[in-house]
Each structure stands twice: as C-alpha cells, then as structure tokens.
Image 1 (cartoon, helix red, strand yellow):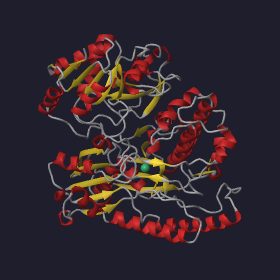
Image 2: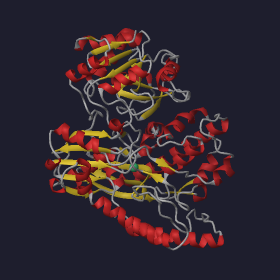
Image 3: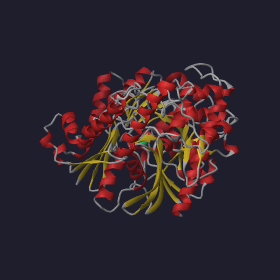
Image 4: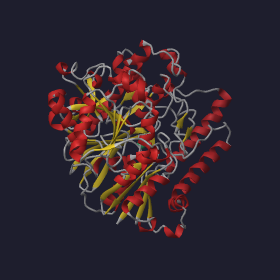
Length: 619
Ligand SMILES: [Fe+2]
C-alpha cells in the first residue's frame, strides 16, 4: 500500500511517500525549484517520490495534506465575524483592544491567514468584511477538499487517474505524528510548537503504539513562534527562517529585557501561555502572508508597543547594538522558560521520560539542548524535518498508523530520503562541465578527503541521498578543519557570506561525544546545542560559539557509514574526532543534483569537490 503525504501552501512545501509503512522518500520542493522555503504545491517533490518508488500516481492508495480548514472552522468563522465587527466599532470610535487584568483579551481574533493559502488584505472595516472572511474560509476548505483534483492538475493527469482516498490531517496532528510514529519509542510524551497551523500554535499529547491522544493545545493568536518571528523582524531580519540568526545572536547579549518578555508572554496553569496582544498586530489587524510559489513572505507582526518598550526597530543590515543583542538574549531566555513550563506540565500529565518534539520552534536547537537539564525528560527524539516540511511525513504515518490502525515499524535514524544519482550521471555531468577529475576507490576517497581537510582545504562533499530537513548531515556538506580559528572567516568570505556572529557546527563520531561535550544524549539530526568542555574549546575554535557551545551532529557508523569513515580518517590523522560541517550551498537551498554541486563549486571558492568517488581540485 502506498501513501503520499503533502505539505502545501505553507513554508517548506514537501512530499513524502511510504510503502507498507516503510519510508521510501521525502523531500522539500525548494531543493528542486531552488527557491528557499518554497511554498505553493510541491509538484516536483511528488514526482520525485513517485519515481523513487517506481510507481505512478494511479498506484497511490491514500493521499493526505497537512492542513484541515474544517478543523475549528466554527471558531474561525466566529472570531472572523467578531474581529470584523470590532473593526467596524474601532473605526468609529478608535477603540483599541487591551489585554485585561487576567491576561485574556476581551475579544479573540481570527488569524487572518493562519489557515489561508494566499494573502488577504485586512478587513476594510465594514460589514462586507465579515461575509468576505466567511466566504474565504469556505472557499479555502473547498480548495483543500479538492486535493485529488489539485494533484491531477499538478501532475497533468486526468482526475480519474487518481484513485487514492484523500485525507486532510490537521496541521499539529501531522507534526505530532511525525514526532512519534517514526521515533524509537513505544510510548512517549509529544509536543508540537510553531507559529500556527489550523488555528493552533501548540499541541501536546501522548503517543502509545499506533495511536496518539491529544492532551492539550494553545490556540492562535497565542504563539511562541509568533513572538520569535515578531522580535526577529524588529531586530532587522525580515526573511522567512531568519529566526535562526537571532538564536545565534542571543549568546552575545545579556537578558536584561527578560521582565518585559515575561509580560509579552505570560504563562498560565496547565501548561498554557498567552501573549500580551498589545505588542502584536496579527490578532487585531491581521498580517499579510504569502504562501504561493516562491519564498513565504510575512508582513510586520510586531506593533508600536515594541518601540515604546525597546526603542526604534533595527534597520535591516544596520549596525547591531548591545540593545539588539540583549533583546535576542531576552527573547531566547523567555522562549526556553515557556517551553520548559509546557514540557514540565506535559511530564506531570504523562509521567513519561521519552519526548517527541516537532514544529518550527523545534528548530531552536539551543532550547532543545537544555531540555534534559531543565525537565525530567531523559530521551528526546526530533526527526530531521521538525518544521513544516516534516508534516508531509507526519501525514503519511497519521494515515498508516492512526487511521488505518497498522502497526509501527519505521524508525527514522537519518535524514537521507531525497534524490541520489548514479555514478554514470555524475560522470556525465562532470564531463559536460569540462572540469578535470580523478577517481578514487571507496577506501581511498575518505582518506584523501580527510587529508585535504586536515591540510586546510575547503571540501565540498556530495554523496548518496539528499537530506530531508534543513541540515546537511554529511551527504550535501561543505567540510573543513574545526581546529583552525580562521575557518569561519574563510567560509564566510569565500562561500557562505553569513553574518559573522553566526556559528558553524561540528559533526562528531558518536562514541567520542563525551570527550568534547558536557552532554552525551545523541543528536543525529544536528538539532541540539550542548556546552563544549571548557578544556576543549581552544582545540576546536571554528565550531565553538561565543558562549562555549556547539550545535553538534553525532555520527554513527550504522546511519552514515561513509561520513563516519571520513571523520574517522580525519581523527586518525589529527587526533580530533570531529569536523566542521556546513550545508553545501552558497546562499540558496542545499544543492540537490551533481549539476547544482558543480555550479556551486564554480561560483564559489571551494578548494576540492568530491562527487561520489570523483574528485575535482581547483588549480
Ligand atoms: Fe507548523
């Protein structure tokens, strides 16, 4: 039985395919169309998944999408009407919503586009806005209802060729499914944290065998993801996905604004939290969002209250001040406090020490790395595409395990579920490029690459299947020597052009983690930041952040034998069991094809390019 899962009209559009419960393929659309975080409908990803399985769309038995406009529909329509009505009143009397003494707003509001597929202007403040919003919601529901038709159009086949049964899986249920059904746990507490999806920003539950029970949720507009994105915008980083920059900036500051952030996000009993909506525009005014083809665009979320509290917003590319760094530190601290507040409640509710985590906020690897230190959880599983692309995977398993009651069997240990290329294809592309290349044996290729890295070269490393999720985990990576303090600057100057405050990350042999890090819990998907042992920091300066931490990838022989051998060969040469690993790209999505890798090599100043066993050296 084949099940196709889709994330569409959200950031990081993606598709995943499973056969009889086994994961066959999963990939993000951005890797094909070369548009970062591409939204829209993931037609190329779907085509790839089908080709990886050697099937046509008519062979697929079930297809699902990770959104369900009918979920909470009555509430959405109700609050849309309330909001429009309030705007009418507000336009006459210039009323402004305030958060009451309980922390609860007098009126709750619909997310203008929280479950929308395209941008909508805010209501014009007359009664037609109510009707328009209701109509939009119904139209939206109908559009997702026609998933089979949409799929047929995208694949250029007749709708009668689609015999698959269609499913709409609520966004956070898809996140939770992705955090549990491919985890190694038989029972686990589960948490999904993001900006929003289907009117919800946070959902938690209990996974057991082939089913998940939802235990609690936080409704939009209250959202940790929104707070992080709003502050990221205020700090002059306007692009979708820029939150990672603020996380990297945070250790440079002091959390001297923590009191204000405790007012911006207020914790309540039973794991709940609420935003002080004075600080935000999304609830009262709506925010323009674009989820069509292209990178997602999100309009300004923070309100003038931010400037009242913190001064003028930083301009994009403006100078970074102590104020900015301290804001980042305060935001990060508050995120962690609230996340641990939810997690500690979840532990009390479930009594389980195993945790599955998902949602865009689960990309906050600094927060993740502190979970074991601040909660009773002892085992944490975060699948590599924890954000919205991973909901495509979650959809597949929500259908297979939860809806069809099939037993579990897949444990996702790596992220290597994307396209791979035959040796002949690589050779053809190399010949077409006109570049001179050598070919090594399997055994020699890692030895030679290790020698290049230890000799100070910047090495492009392209092997096997493309990774799913934002992290390059040793198949589409640029690798350099972590011992060289100048490597960060070299990478930035020659290739990455990133802000100088952002750290680079290490890949370390799994057995050696305790030699270099204060914590040893596996981090195979590079989604945990741990403190580096103080005595080791000067040994590996290129991967040591300003606060002595590192966002590590633990590499095991079983999951990626070739990458493991490369690091092992580097260890034999240098006595250091880790390398610096950054994604193979310039300032675009991670390379997918050999041709993409060759183009990146030609555009940048990578010294040596390894494509499988073939090696190109820059003269
Ligand atoms: Fe999400």
